[in-house]
Amino acid sequence: MTYTIDLFHQIVYRYKDHVVVADFTDLWPQYNVFNPARQWIGCTNASNELSWKSACRAIIENKPL
Image (cartoon, rainbow, N blue to C red; front, top):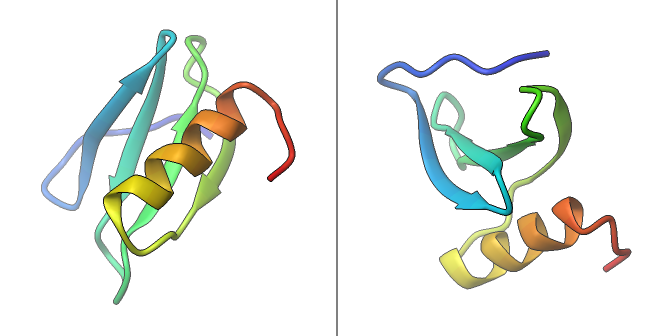
């Protein structure tokens, strides 16, 4: 799964050459994490900015929460 950018899918965060794309098509945004090769490596639907950013960093660093 690779990502595409449009009105409902926006890049919201970059960390260590990884990209986080917010999917606004549902009631709550879902944050999908992609590696530099544009492959999906995980996602979170945390509710506030600090929690989804820390969850995305944990996904990127491959650390359990």
